[in-house]
Length: 336
Ligand code: TK8
Image (cartoon, rainbow, N blue to C red; front, side, top):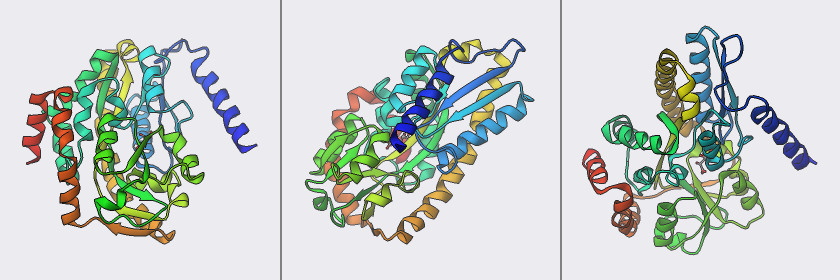
């Protein structure tokens, strides 16, 4: 019954969003604009959702209510990939996927999927906000999307229901859900696991039904999506860092006046700072909640981290052509 109701809700919402308005960024007769934003996780509890709320608040205030931002969370409007497709068609105005599925649209984003690329959030900020990150964001131009800026999903950790993972050998044979991304898939294979690419909104059920042993996500989402309820072990491995990419449909963008474009970019940049701070605070807070819930938490030792990094090294070469060799070299220099 619950499932039926949620499907019904989704259908109603979808028809509300896609019907009638005939595309995104609709300017109403009174000159007002409504921007519809879809997101895969919760609006109220996840750091991404709180960042989007900040964006909404700023845009509505700065435009004196001329622009309204409507937020649809929990994958109500689709998953990361299908929402990006809706942006391309102009049936949805904005979304904020993790960077990893974005690489299906433009390969340059694969740079951020490299294992252990960043060790601190400050390193990530520097690359994302600097020339390399901005150059990668610009590649969205080729797919009818305008990239605004990067929010933070964060450092990803492994959970599972089988046994404690303290070394790369402990990953052996574990069925771990990964995002739909070739580097993530290849990396987990190199670590001896049995990776299962899957959309985010299918993960909870698969963990509950034990068709998966585990998954990997930042602490904030492990808590927010309720994965901890179906998992017993968490390893703080920080093996990938995932930015969120805040983006707007090119069709919507082109309908906005230059002043409104400027306003939206400014609010996105401001919300970004708030969101990153919020994410870094919640990462620690939600880890405590996961512990309180009774999960066994291990932190990967520096020696084991080095071993995992070494084992995954082949992906750096294998994907350097897709990323662009010069681009990759520049990033590697910046993180040295
Ligand atoms: C939410 C996704 C999710 C991501 C994943 O929209 O799929 O594991 O971490 O947060 O972007």
